[in-house]
Image (tube, rainbow, N blue to C red; front, side):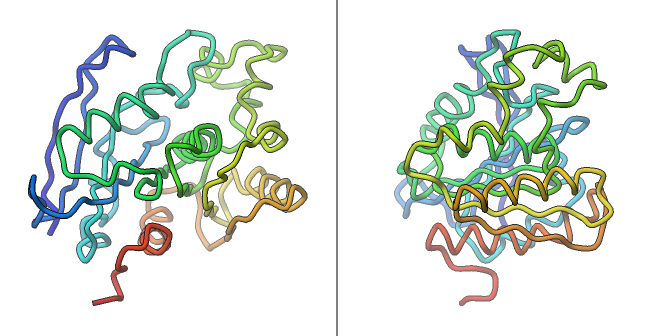
Length: 252
């Protein structure tokens, strides 16, 4: 079973101490083989411990050598936005460097994946596509893929500004599709049939198809709940292992 370590990163980019939960393979050692790294991003009302509180992630990764990194990023939408915070640079550069210094990791993009739920799903897709030199694989559950168009959430307004703010266009996943730079990461996302976000996930799927961008999209029974995420997380992590050329749960 993976060991849980709760560590803190004193971030110069964010000018604060970021708590991070890390799941480490039991046979990890400084002189052992390098491990792939999966970064998981929490939702709007969650914390860095949500994956441990609401899913059986330790069971799902038990047969793997994944290092799973779960940082606390508040209600940031994982975007620099109007406030000028450097959350993107923190996640793409500073956090990986910090983790690489603590653990024996695969440092190339071929050994890196990023995923998330809800707000974190939006963050994972946008960071994975916008900083594709850092991640080879990206996945999302119940992603808030059209979050920059939301206008009724105070946290959203703080990040993206008023309705006519150019920041909203800048951070649109749909607009990004016209500006992608190779290499494009492998992409997997899903949404519950009863999720209030299912229509925007469908729209993003159709936009990707129109641009002929390879991806996997699935809809499954369920709503915008942690139960839905937990029921689908194991399949996503198996897919991630396949992309990173790692054994999956069903493999010896």
